[in-house]
Image (cartoon, rainbow, N blue to C red):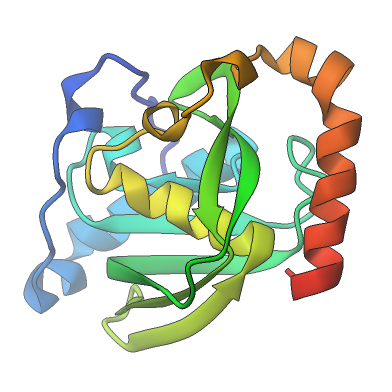
Length: 191
């Protein structure tokens, strides 16, 4: 496994639609190494998720994992989940405001409206079908990562630019109020 360099805002790879992988490509050793590198890079950077375009690979693969993450201690636990060619479908029109950051947009956070409940269908890294429902903050995490596959960054979804803040100022001025809202989401959705 190799820790890869993470592309940052302004790099063209982050703004293109990633291509789907065929079953043969997914099974190939180089794709399995890519997935290993994606997971290793995400963990090294303390990310809650990472998409292949963020490590300069424009293919439709994401990894999500939340387990006592120091950057997001308020997020519910998500076991390591690798999704290939994922599709997200909102299950209602209900949304919530999510203060988001991104490894590809260093030292910036902002509020993005996310669907409160989604269905995700995909393949796992072995090519087996995956189909699950995610709610609350967990739904927000998956939507954030899947946006990367279509060339979208969280800043594209920030409708009120006065919510943009550095990490330090988020911690100082906004964290407590957001964590309280996050706890309410977790209590309501269990995720």
